[in-house]
Image (cartoon, rainbow, N blue to C red; front, top):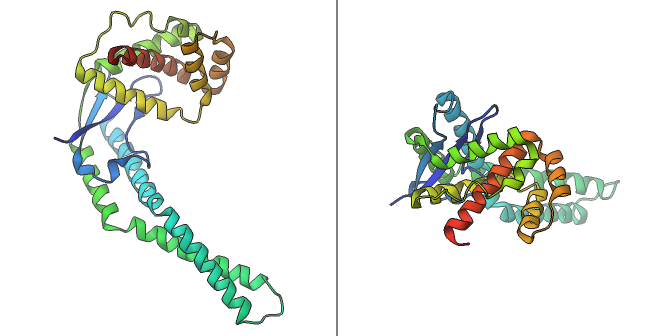
Length: 254
């Protein structure tokens, strides 16, 4: 049975679309082995479905291109270095010129750049890249978007955080005591936590904030720093993420 892979739409003034089309994601290697599922909070469906799909097409194609280009990076790097060295040595030893080094470095660099760009073009033109993009476009065309209680919880917690400000952080876990997740919802919640974690991978202050709460360290200064770094809306979503992470940890016994 194909493995479920999710696209989440968190509605709001600035909707957040979380998808699996990051270059490092293995979905590009065997897209036929996944079942793409769309999830959004209860209530109205996400705005313009055509615009959403167009955005997902663009993100998928960009991610696929980067994925296949990156896969052969080291091979192209070594080949490029070899070409540069070969051209440089050939011109240095065989061809005599009045200005040493200049022509060798220039022509060697041009040859190496040409080889690298040709390698990138071949990676993008490969049958595997084309087949992956085609299969993922089909998956997006047939993806079914449905309401999700998990996304609904995140939207509610985010809205509460927007109302209360950073103080909502201290309510983390208090409103999740009576919340339980079905196995399918727990699977969605884990996937959503993974996407949100990836969204803020360049913001180590959130990892520091979470670690501080786990250790029982007062997070006041870290909370202020996170708010300055992320802004009000993203900070509210991050607080909702911490609540969901706590709920998932409790449900799985982690």
